[in-house]
Image (cartoon, rainbow, N blue to C red; front, side, top):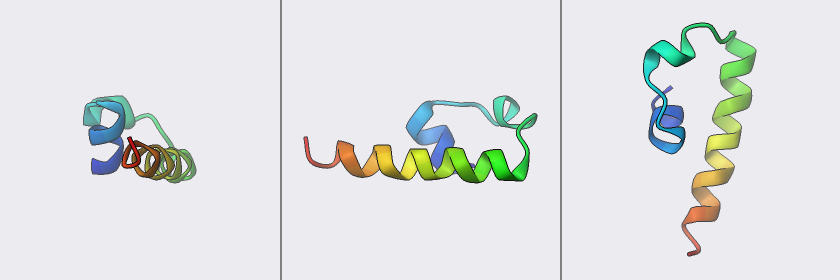
Length: 40
């Protein structure tokens, strides 16, 4: 969840409604996004 908070600026309350599967999917999106930001 910390990855999502840092990359997407989401508060923990925004993630409470997400299922574990959704959290895992968003975490992967955060990983991809944070890696692509490193090349700028």
